[in-house]
Length: 158
Image 1 (cartoon, rainbow, N blue to C red):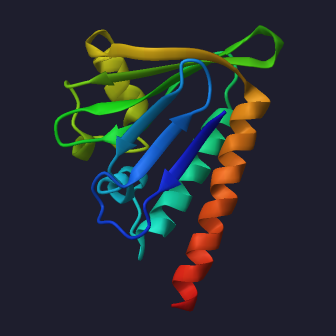
Image 2 (cartoon, rainbow, N blue to C red):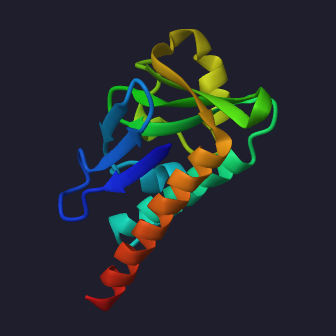
């Protein structure tokens, strides 16, 4: 299962967490700072940009067919990290966390991801990998989305 959590009261640095509940377990801390630019939209709150990102992430997993796709997560000034995902038999998804210092977080967008990753494929360094059920990935992301919707609702009240 993969879940994404947000530190709602911190600034936009080291405030979003990617948690992989598998063996080996894994947590990656990243910034929401470049997420709005990545999604090519303006957002009023970081919970709103995080919700939009979670929906993007879920769409990528649900739309995964037979190709390998890259889902950026850690958009840093110095590098980009994220998940290479590919379908396997019996409803499984191979998930690999990898990063490269040949791309910076500020120079990648939702529209340019595939091209930028293909141009720099050799520069990615694999950190961890898992074989996870697609239904568990979806369930974890839906859980994260529902949690973030509550945060967005609270943002609108205050």
